[in-house]
Image 1 (cartoon, rainbow, N blue to C red):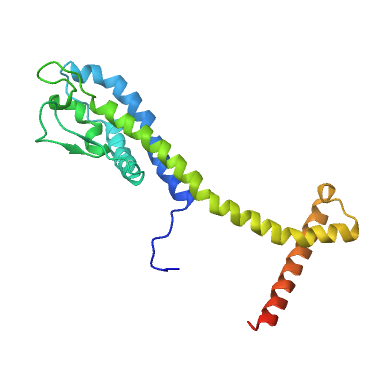
Image 2 (image 1 turned 180 degrees about the horizontal axis):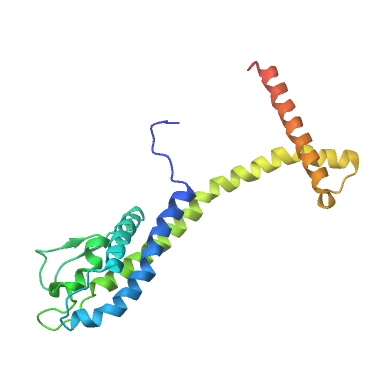
Length: 197
């Protein structure tokens, strides 16, 4: 095993990335649906605290989208000289007439907010799948530990005639303690046998 090899990400990492996407998606969609008509009518954007907060959230969401491997870019219809890359720059590009989603010839392109919402939804699905995949080794480890630690309790239950499902809390704690002692003694004995100590 190479200790310098990049370690797989934990379920917590993927959960945090998903949270960044989801904490931006709905507030952004609500905000855009409220202001886009005025912006397209020619009113200037209102640079208030809500928009400022969405800009901050878009930065974290953009990093999460990139962590999911989703790439997002947008140029003005009919040209690529001013291409924008990433969630944060594209999220508010609809405020600029160049990125309104209509070409000079009347063709409709995806608007910046449609592009951003699609990228967020794609990233959310990928991040959810990665979170589930990262839980699999932990589930296997959990099952193995339950088997190893549960076997002495199982044997004690058979020897003393205990029904493990009907134990009181104190009995369950005592049986757990007995299991830990038995596992410790087994490990100690195995270590002595193979010369670890």
